[in-house]
Image (cartoon, rainbow over all chains, first blue to last red; front, side, top):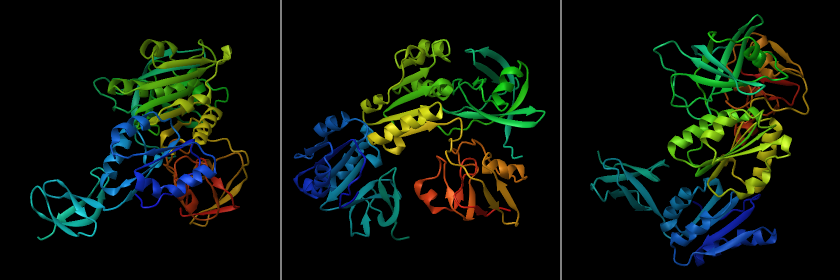
Length: 151
Length: 319
């Protein structure tokens, strides 16, 4: 998940997708695509709902590259939906903006808690254990490991 | 000579599949089971010959869950250096031989939403077990299979009997070939798999790349090392101070083995990484399909089964 889109060459088609604010963040890569005369679709995701976008993305052919720019708060659920369709990490650039929450995995009860980016410690929502946010990231849980803060 | 741990098996049946292809069933001693394998796996077979041990790799074509026997299909190669000729002309029912445990350098992707197999000739073999695995898992797939004619088409009856809805045949005698254009129609989430002669694989891999397929969606299985256009001899300098000459006609791995170095190896086509060796200095010309771009650019390791030196000498971190 990035803050800025980077243009990727060599794809048969590009999809620039985002809400109004997100599409502004994609203007540089969209312009580059236009300049080079590439095949592309611009998709305004006004209601930030996945249903319609999902059907649209499912109907795309191999070699399609997606730029998705939406608030960080909903980016993860879209990412999961794209991966379920079959988009690989190499097929998509996820661009986020706004408030960013960090998922934290509770080492005791395995609850995923959402923490503010600058927050170093938090109490687990389920078991109330005080957790210290580590830099140990799990791709499987899409969360950072929260250790016991006070032993 | 380097030898991995092996299983002792006996040939229990031989079937003439087509004019040039024989199918061999291999069984372990009574009461024992062979290890289960995953679709796309192969074994190394060890053949004792008067000239020494011949090691050849063949895809397993039996059902991955059936541990009572393994099956391989061997095409008699016109350019055979002994392997396929021995299998065809000397091996009999009842013969014993050593085989490796199953290995898989061509596994099914667990991220794929749909699998498409492109096979040419004997390149069909890994797909037989892959299709069986996918059908058991209830996943979707299709097969595009090119052959000279129905008569020369290995597993034709088996495929039409079990996978008629998923399979499409292309016989060159009828001027029917698989167009790379098909790659344009696959939906996102499709993974493509290629197996056959090198030109066939190259052609399809390039077409997929040109369309923008991500590398991880494109899978290939090679039976032979890449054909290099320009090959030059070079010297390998070892830590012990010894120097080994690698001429144009041999691989660096063969030269090292000839000089008695116990270098582990397996596929000999640049796929598995078993023979990877550290390099101290020298420019490497990488021809493998194993190391990442970053690893290749680092110029500090080599797969000697296919890769060579660009410079006149490679200084190696081995004794």
